[in-house]
Length: 221
Length: 69
Image 1 (tube, rainbow over the protein chains, first blue to last red):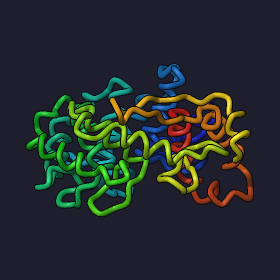
Image 2 (spheres, chains in turn blue, cyan):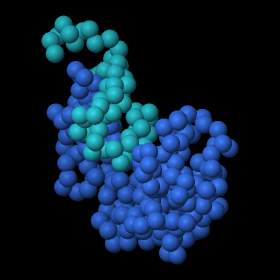
Image 3 (tube, rainbow over the protein chains, first blue to last red):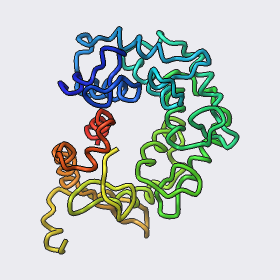
């Protein structure tokens, strides 16, 4: 916990990815999640400064920048809404506008991309659907069955899930895609047992850990 | 790893999958998984760790994924 607090960047109001780094939405969410899991007393945090940091990153079109340098990505919309939700401060940003921007990033294949017109990607789908769920706005998703179909299509012959069409399966998408299917109430649209077998084969029985796919080296992400 | 060593793996969890004639189970190496997670911090902080160096900028998220794993 002390290390997490050391990563707080007073000059921006957010948390950095390591000690002395500039504040960024990605690591501000991670820090708040870690502190929440550890039941840390939020009243001892500079909550107001953290909220102001997040609020300052919302753009007029509803999107969010990751930090003061302005990169726009729907991942940051998720980070902002998730972090504010944990801080019970969702009302401090323009939620309808944030929802409007995320909805504008849905593609004709049903999926969502990193910004308007960007290719559908399972990780971005998680961020967009997760953010919409936090904003209680899942109704803005066009054709949820089409989105469910696109997600189900991510299951490969190996049983594993990939992030985009024609890409290799990767265990990490088990998390992103199952989470979305769960939010959408469509977990049974993929084969649970074949996915479980794929993940089991990606384990390292000697040194522990789980790799991205069978026969690779384990990592954490 | 030999068959004998495999038997020494203490805490494994068998998860049943499939139904009927396809019923089988997969094995989750729980204790190895926990040992991997527990040893990660020391490996990443080691001065000669390449992985530790290239992921230095996202250590905060690494910790989140480690404690949730």
